[in-house]
Length: 87
Length: 456
Image 1 (cartoon, rainbow over the protein chains, first blue to last red):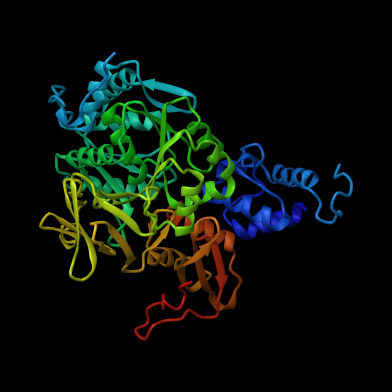
Image 2 (tube, rainbow over the protein chains, first blue to last red):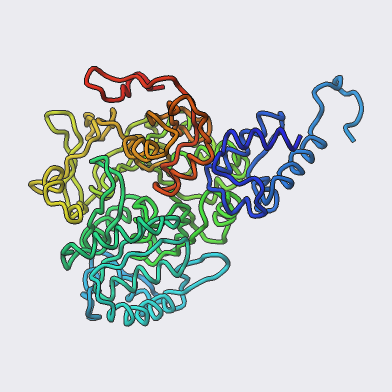
């Protein structure tokens, strides 16, 4: 997943240094918007303003963690209606 | 405690320097009458009117010693920036705020340009922008224009002392800087946020315990909120008194959505530019919600359409001219009128409607970009043989810049290196977000890039 996210963000934000430990500080509002949109569309997850924190967008790894966390808590579309837990 | 100062009946200032008749005279009066009233909130710190005045006055002593007539500085979203801003004016200096990430070469280039020109005494601010003429230049704004802009906004949007105004855009741009003026005129409180990059900080500012809260957002900022903070915005519906937008066309769908989410909030679409000042505004949440409608002229302004269909503006808010370029000034400003590049019409009720813009300027989130400037910078990159800079639809931002490029000798172009090269030469908002390769660039019969061919 990390490679895919890296590939996507490199495509959308060519100026961004994805190896940086201070990735958030390099972003502007356009960059934050682009990351939220790109990841929500690619992974079918809901991302909103509350997710756009300096902590979540600090490094590539923290972005990956955010996506993984969302995927864990998001309802799985493959499960039948009312069919079991996502835990 | 009665803190009322009636803007139009203010006593003349006795503070000396350039204070009399300036926005700083209101700052002094609020400092005298209500020294403990919060003037600016930023990053957890609050500065009162008394403190702001005292610190700005002290700092102005330092600027009085400086030789240049105009101080060039990098703007920041901070109380310190406002202190410098007021201190320069109090010292009789003009201030030239540049974008925070402005390169050193651009900074010194502008400093040299400013120092080589005679700046008239009544000029307060020089804002660098790509506007009506399509190339970067310094626009001189007088103290009189600033107070007229403030008066326009105070009366049209009812700025009052109990208002908290949240600033979310860069303070070197007229969109946000012009909101400092009415807020200080009426003794309101400003809250400076880092920008829409940190939507949570912005939303947090809207939640501060003030009876009335208002803000200015460019249409792309509104689009961000609608996409990523719709629920939070709806929860704030009872708190937000008004939201002003401007600087770029706002889509009809976004306007209607804002009216649905904020049914009792006044939602203004304003016609303004650095050259004209703040001219017209329209509350599109009061029964007439039509994209492109920018309402009637405000109290210190007048607007008409030239026989060629261009929007022309008159009144006290107009610029003084372009720094060091009398010919360019005369081409835009004559007979007390600024003729813009915007095409428009005025309806039967006297409301201005924009119908388009002549020329090739691209509007990115309220910033005007001349594509030729981007292309010239890209062509200086060794691997680029030819290119064209175009506008491309973007789902969140409305419009993003795209560079279509032809590699030299079929070589691969390192896009990251190209973007870094552009970053060195241009402001950040002028660096294209999207890049694509082509084997040639379509051109018109006279060899110019065929911009119509690439229009989305």
